[in-house]
Image (cartoon, rainbow, N blue to C red; front, side, top):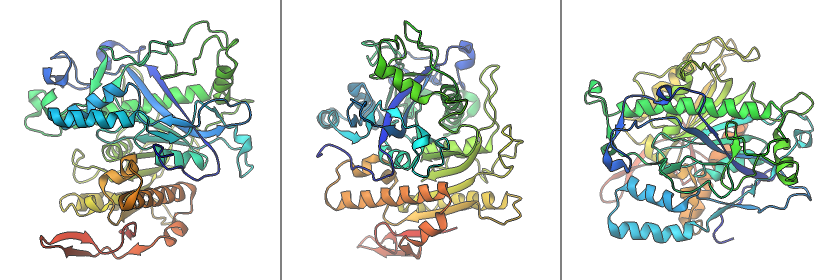
Length: 491
């Protein structure tokens, strides 16, 4: 279809559902993170806290059961609702003029009908139907978006992972890095309206930072990283509870205190008379004492740009605190950092945290780390040496008698920072579209191979470039030697 993102190939059809859980069991003062406040330019009342936990939301991508009982659509809207709010957020993010705003809203008319291939609100496929006949629970991946990203900005990559048998939770960060987020209601006909509890993208001029931070330009970013870590732990905790329990089929009204579906449902009440909704919720519940999604071990974290920085700080700090609530360390074994933005992170470092795992099956080794860089970030002179230091620290931090390499650093030739998201294939025709699809294909191929344990063999199938730099054009610009999509292996 002309207005549908390219389909992904895989073993399983992909389903998608968006969930949210309110943060109501914590004192209001404890839900305020950091000391930054908002200015009037943010579109919100001046002086209010810039970072306050209200709810956590994410879109799940997963292997879907599309047996004869499925009656829903096979495509899903690419832009999260409400579209007008999202467009307003992007114009605020870019500081656009009136003429540019008109252009954005014109493009927004097209965006309303832009879709990606996924079975919306389909049931989770029972792991007993796995292609390898193992019956093992589906592995879990948690994805963190970058600046100005959303929970659906990386649908190609998330769908590719899901099509190969992963359950991916694409987080919607409410720290002011998304263009527009809204506290939602699970009540039909109420959720999705642009009410007062919404957050636009927070530019530096929108923030008043505590004077004790002096001129630290990254002071607010550091507070955002703590906020994002909390969101990651809260999303994981809520999702783990969902797949570790039985759904309540006796509710007469929406359960707003637990994880619930948003946007168009499926709603979690009156399930006795809502068979399709009941089957959906029951597809996630524990079956014969066994969860259908593996949350106790072997979790993969993935993220792009500021999202990749989020993962690095999550793995180099102890679990965050939320009032009196304590979290166990996440049982992470693999980390995929896509074009990580490192400027808010300490230097040298960061190094993986050494902790006693609360999950007995987890090794006491740092997770394996895969870093895939764009050519743009690799040629960033001040940035790349810092990234190399992190990878070297990671490789030298493990007391692993097998001497297994625990961190890999790659660059994709001609790849840009935007190429890791769907924006690189938004218009998927012509040379740019072909190259955009090639970048995402390579990124997803290597990511899957890394998680599933055949990374070295997958890398041998790629076209490898030398990593040498050449100058070109009258202005003597720098670029890597090679063709678009070639892979440079640094470590």
